[in-house]
Amino acid sequence: MRSLATLLLLSTVPALCAEPVSYYKTIRPIIQQHCQGCHQPARSQGGYLVTNVESLFQTGDSGKPGVVAGKPEVSYLMDEIRITGGKSEMPKNGPALDVKQIALIETWIREGATNDTPASAKLKLIDTDHPPVYANSPVISALAFSPNGELLAVSGYHEVLLFNADATQVVGRLIGLSERVQSLAFSPDGKTLAVAAGDAGRFGEVQLWDVAKKKLRNSVPVTFDTVYGVSWSPDGSTVAFGCGDNTVRAIDAKTGKQTVQMGTHGDWVLGTAFSRDGLHIASVSRDMSAKLTEVAGARFIDNVTSITPGALKGGLMAIDVRPTTDKKTTRVPDDEGGRFQEKNYDELLVAGSDGVPRLYKMHREKKREIGDDSNLIRKYQAVQGRISGAKFDADGKRFAVVSSLDGKGELAVYTTAAEKKAVTCDGVTLPMYAVAWARDGKTIASGGYDGRVMIHDAATGKLLRSTPALPK
Image (cartoon, rainbow, N blue to C red; front, side):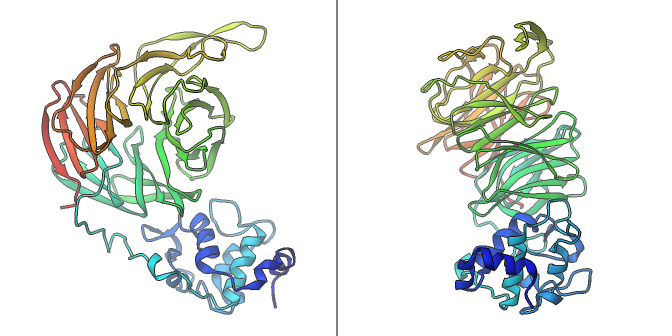
């Protein structure tokens, strides 16, 4: 006997009756979005996995089979996702699946729970017991030094490699579900590593790893594409990131619950950065703008950059807040009565497709006018190609950028107070995508197309060492 949810669905969407419900096209995306954050090899809560069809049929800690082909009434998965009394047991930290999604899963099980995954889409299992095996070093898309300066996190395939500070030895492998790692950021206390990742065109994922234990503490599936530009609030309570659906989002670092969603960008959001007081998130996008979002109200506040067509040449891909300790204030217009109020302001480094780093005030001092770019503090000498990574040193007096164009790359260091490059680093010939400063500011780590972690002397630009981003 079919459930009420199934009958309602079939009566409102008769087209679903025309052919059996597809696991690959219909059920898999639902499970990826709502279930696999907690039920994957790196974090198998309840001893139950949902990352492939075979695992759905297995028994977890409950001792009951998750799926029994043809029998949704005895399939434990259905017991967990059904809505009773206005709520469901699963997903544990998220909203219940809607009635149509539940009905589709029930129908798929009743029809035999057939696996119609194409042979070309069946992926080899990759987890801690079956780690990635590399024929060549993977392209490096993200780097981050731990706050204590002891670790350097490097992106890999399905994993993050933890190197010692001088990038001579791998001391840990954080192997997760996502194929592609896009961005890395350590929490302010260094205890947690946030990873913006996903599988292109399938799902996005924010991973939160316990660094000391090298264990996945939380996995938050989000959207249907990879996510980008992860950053931490200064108090370590919130993690922000950008999405391919043009949104800026943030989650609670403990629970994974979404706390912010801002959708005024017109293209992919590729970078985020919190203000030093944690009250705002600045973001950059392929739409050629940097925008400001209020954390508490999850609302769009202002365009930081000019909105004049043609003012910026191409999309923005990199952003960083200057970690200066200088106490600077700006007179911010008060909408009520035209009064002014004194506020501390932050400085933002943004860069992208035109290869020109720019320094902006985060908050506006005067009323916006068409054609203005009044938040701009300084425009710097261009590097060759598009800038994918831009980072300040610990005191904000210098910053470094990496770029790529037509198979070539550049790593340059600037003094924040001067427009010209201070140093162009040696030995950089191929496209570069990621950059990070050592804690003491003496060296810079960078990486890119050839999969090698390069360590340069920040003062002279001399290449000190070059290490393949491989586990051994």
